[in-house]
Length: 140
Image 1 (spheres, rainbow, N blue to C red):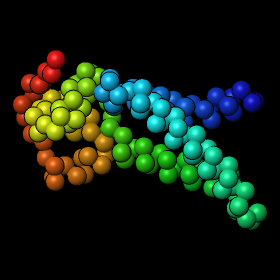
Image 2: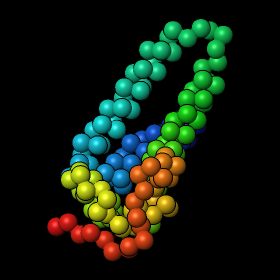
Image 3: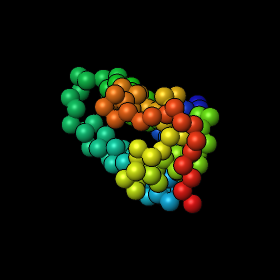
Image 4: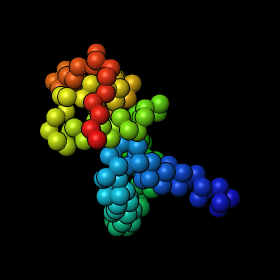
């Protein structure tokens, strides 16, 4: 029972900590992003351990943890782009141009709506990037 509980408890948070930086950040920055994600998880765990001691006894901690999980799920769904089916090299190319201040020069598949986060899709009208040209900009 403990093994199953631990497996499913760690499946989401720990997998997200390592998968998100590996898929959405440029190769040169991935180790930094892994560290930031891991540190954020540790700070969140510390915050929860401290705050739970000050929560009144009439509050159900199990439900509170569930609500926090749903909030984290929403934040992840809203802000993290979907990269399934996208070549990670395209994300590297897009990030290189963003870091060089030339975001408007990228016209590859990483700008297609299927690979954008919900936040990016909703704000697309403000920062529209033309995706009609399917040729990638290769930065070597």
